[in-house]
Length: 322
Image 1: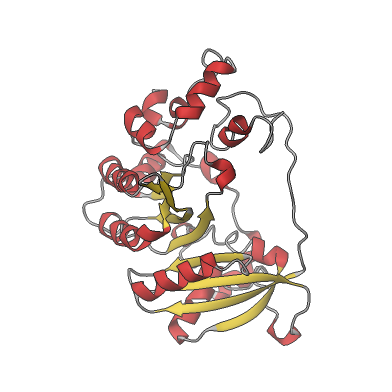
Image 2: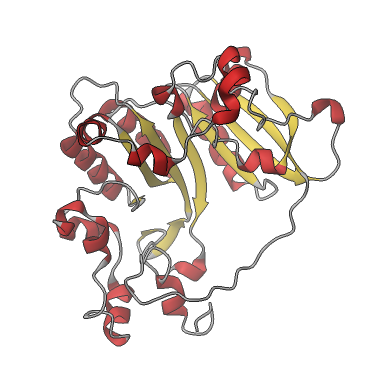
């Protein structure tokens, strides 16, 4: 067993270890009481500077239970903040999850068009599944008319299609085209580099919308695979942003391997991290430059995992698996 105080190095190393330290057979989670609704506030932003500033302010505000942003262009986006509540104004309750309702990201875009900050109440289950029906915004590529009112009312109850079904019905030709002309990536960027990240993603892939979600690296994980930003021996940033890009690149010179390697290089340069579910084109040395293997290597040796399990890179890298 391990906790924050009992074998803390192992406790910190398990996240992101992808089963390369051993078998995880039991986990105790700390949970918090939930409430019936979230009070959601939509803040439209019409310049990149405003969007970044508002997102950072709300991400660092500990009174918020949830924060995210949807960026629709290089300059415009909507920042959303939410808190758990039980008491609501019934006239402002919006059950966004019903099949006849607009896709969430399309609905959020209406606040950008109106330019007005607005607040409403969303049932908790509906909020948790706000991106489920449109698969964030990927459904528009599969069913272009899927958000049309007539389609939602007649066929909305059929969706969303299960991802396993989409994969099983995918031919080899479609799979190759998908890999060559489609991006699914989440990059974790230090908050101070968010504007640079938006500009870099625009220049390299121009995929919109982009999804922004804050993530804090807590001190309890400092001996793990991911580290806060450190300068001159001092921690200067613990707040990161998950920049999610899902869709078809609109740049004319997109080339999957070369383009994504440039994005990975940018993420390493700003001391960020790549989500490991996605395609990784880094070399082993570049991967070790991004992720601190110091404690990980020691633990693999001390627990006898070196001969029993592959390294993380060998599990997540397509090149290594070949």
